[in-house]
Each structure stands twice: as structure tokens, then as C-alpha cells.
Amino acid sequence: MVAAAGGGQIALARGDAVNGNLSVSDLFQIYWKPFGQFWFLYAMFFAQLISFLVWRRVRPLLLVFVGLLTFLGAFYALPKTIMLVSYGLFYFFVGMMAREMKLLEHLGRTWPSVVGLLLAGALGAVFCYVAGVPSYLPIPAALFMVPAVLALSIRLGHALAGGRSVALLVTIGQCSMGIFILHILVIGAVRLAMTKFLKVSDPAVLLTVLTLSATLIPVAVQLVAVRLGIDKLVGLPSSVKRGRGVLRKDVVAG
Image 1 (cartoon, rainbow, N blue to C red):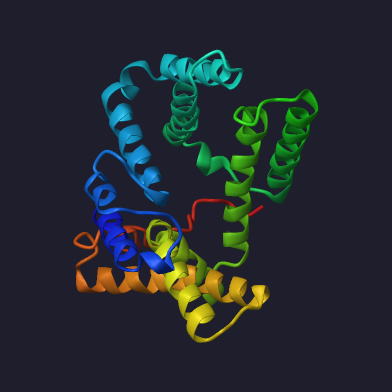
Image 2: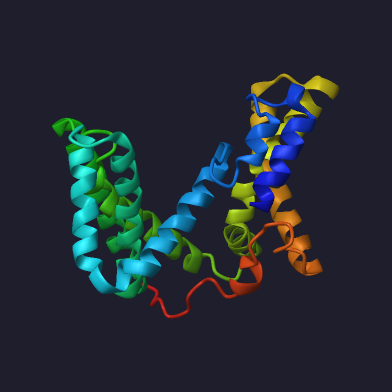
């Protein structure tokens, strides 16, 4: 909420330099009407609330129920809002089940298992395309491709363990929520400075500088906020403090 309010005030102050038409009334409505990328934070809050209230009591049936709603909604048998909510909750609950079953511990143990998951995900994607599966129902592909990406990350992390590049990637991963919250503000400010003041118009240069800025500046801001103890005050997570030792040592190298 703090991040949304701060971003909104900046957008109002420099409305001539940002995309969109944000008004003062929009800023006061952020408690129930998120704008920009902040909808994701609201969605995660309600997903956590729903899981806290009902997950441990009816989790298998709940997963089947939201999966059915997603399936029916994708074929326009239900209102779009219900379909979108159930679609998000389905993957959220699948993730919770994977965590409780400790499936992540079995990912990325060997390179053949990673390649197998990637191939299964690719075949699932081809199946969805050939079968004409609606865009909001790529579950056959996602249930393999998401674990494949996680497994690939784990394998690469352990293959490169000990290097400075890995430490940097771990830090970026721990700061991912801060990057999500701040990247649009950073991109807007840097793009304004480059195009209006520095007169830079080369797309390749803009893409490179904006990508690096949108990643590294939020990381620096979050690290400073955590170091000063004001991370919660400015609406940034304390994942850097909680996430030390991210690479798991229990994964056996294959």
C-alpha cells in the first residue's frame, strides 16, 4: 500500500512525463482499486487470506474445485471474473501442495531430470497449440514447464556455486519483490532523463540501460532500506535478511 501510494504521488506530480491518466481520486481509491502493477500484490494478499481460512481443511477438494472453475470459465461457461480468480488460485494452490509435499527437494538433482521436464513442458505446449486449448488453460504445459524452470535454476545455481556471479543472482532473487514494486518508477525516471535531457533515441541503448537500471537500482534501494531498518516503513520486503543461504546444500549433484 505504501509503495502504491508513493508511486501514485509521483505519477500525479509528473503526469506530463508518465503514461496513463492517474487522478487524485484514483490515489484515494487504491485501498479497493489498485492501479498499474500493484494489482498483483492485492491478489497475493487475498490468495494468502483464502488459503489461511480454508486450505488445511479442504485442500484436495479445493484444488479440484478451482481447477473445474478454471476449465469451465476458459470455455466461456462462467463469467470471466470467476474464471480469472479460479485460474490464479489453481496455480497458487498447486504451489502450496508442492511445498507441503516437499517436491522442490526432488527437482534439479540430475541434468537428465531437468531435460526431461523441459521436454515434457515443450510437448505439453505443442499439445495445447495443436488441440486449440484456450489461452487461459495451458495447464498441461505449465505443470511441467514451471518445475522445469525451477529445476534448471537449481542445477545452474549448484553448477556455478561459489562464484560472485551466483551471489549477485541470489541477491537479485531475494530482491525480486522490491524490483517488482519499483521497476516501473525507475524505468519512467531513467527513460525521461535519457530521452528528454540526454536526447538518446537508439532502441538498443534504451533497452539495455533501462533493463539494467530497472533491476539494479531497486536492488540497491532495497539493500539500503534493509541496512537502515526502514524496509517495512517504505513498503519493501525484508527478504534479503530472511533469505540468506538461498542455495540449498541438500541437493545432490548429479
